Amino acid sequence: MKNINLSMLCDFYEFTMSNGYLKNGFYKKNVYFDMFFRSVPDNGGFAIAAGLQQVIEYIQNLHFDSKDIEFLRSKKLFDEKFLEYLKSFRFTGDIYAIPEGTPVFPNEPLMTVKAPAIEAQIIETFVLLALNHQSLIATKAHRIVRAAGGRAVLEFGSRRAQGVDGAVTGARAAYIGGCAGTACTLSDVMYAVPASGTMAHSWIQMFDSEYEAFRTYCELYPNNATLLLDTYNTLKSGVPNAIKAFNEVLLPKGIRNFAVRLDSGDIAYLSKETRRMFDEAGLHDCKIVASNSLDEYLIADLLMQGAKIDIFGVGERLITAKSDAAFGGVYKLVAVEDNCGNIVPKIKVSDNISKITNPHFKKLYRFFDRKSGKALADELCVYDETVGENSPHTIFDPDAVWKTKTLTDFIVKELQVPIFRNGVSVYAPPNLEQIKAYCAQQINLLWDEVKRFENPHTYYVDLSKNLWDIKQQLLRENQR
Image (cartoon, rainbow, N blue to C red; front, side, top):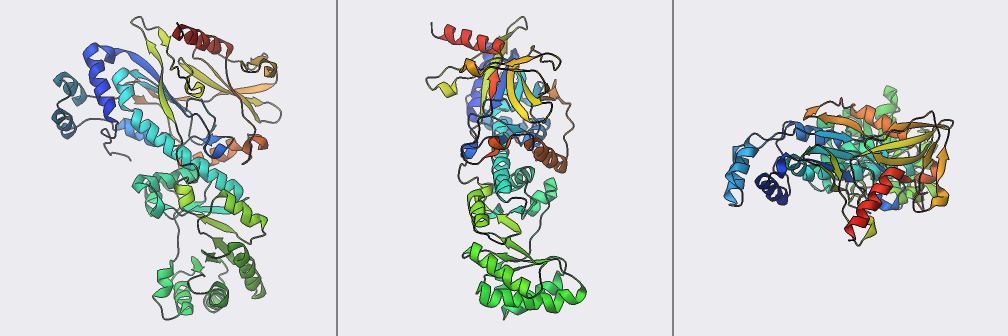
């Protein structure tokens, strides 16, 4: 993504609105947008924020070259003054965001943009594209990793991904979510996601016999031998030929780090039989890899049936998040500065209650129990509200006052951090290994009830009393 100009990766109406803002003077107004999502994919208890690094790189390189300007001129819609404005365009605003790898919940701003109106509008499409896609894949990957119960999960989905970026940044997001590596070489080149792989069925078919294919591969790659068992017959030829190749080529060299892969058939039964046959041959160290249209539910079923699998390779159902293939994040105006610099809250009202937005420039706090370290609740506050740890704090639940709770022994953390100030990056992004480790550590702070696949406990994200009152006042004003 670095040094690639993606300025025209933008919904066309961003340009028509921006042209209008310039004509009526709104382009000088500072506005505030929140990027948030309304529901967790797969009816899960939480999602994982991802994609921030790509937004940073996009904004750092955001500009319009002469070809871009000429294309827009050819549409015969835009004023020359607007096209001249774009020639020297750069992002000059502020951005606050939740760091990648953080567990997040509906209606929380993953990113808040404060910028002149045109700048805030033009970045909307890419912000949504990057955060929606990678948050979706990181969330799906972690569900699969949790189902695997400590066994390694490898991302195998490039050939079924939705385009190049779907494969490359999808593998990055899957790694954040807990996958151990990827089959996508370019993701390793660009993002240091560990790439690995051995053979396809075509390798075996190229030889006169399955045994010859196995033996040759072991000779070529003695320290990286994973043999595919199901080209012909898994138990009658695949396993015996693999045992023979390992015994004749690798064991004499003292190598016992090898594996086999099952890619079709009754994986539960075949894995148990394969394990039995390898153990009877004294090859207890041989790992068994399973692939073939897996997801968290199939993996859980396999393990419930006693499948003997050490590593899972998961492809299309991970990289496309097949069971719930859209994250659904939105980018909504929440405030505008008036001519005196006062922040005026804005609200979007809808007949669909779930689409009514939370107004204002906000802060997001997470409360942790001081004794257990577990996350208790999140609270959205107006930007100038503060929360201290040395006095009791009441979590206000306007929909069920009887649930209102006073916290007395807690640690509080503001979740959003500054990313850009006045158009300059002020954030030092962690590397991918650090993001992955942080993600695992933060998810460990959630109660197990929140992490259930079925009917997870609802983690509370409440509004402060002050923000609630402001929202209600705006709703009343819009009913007049």
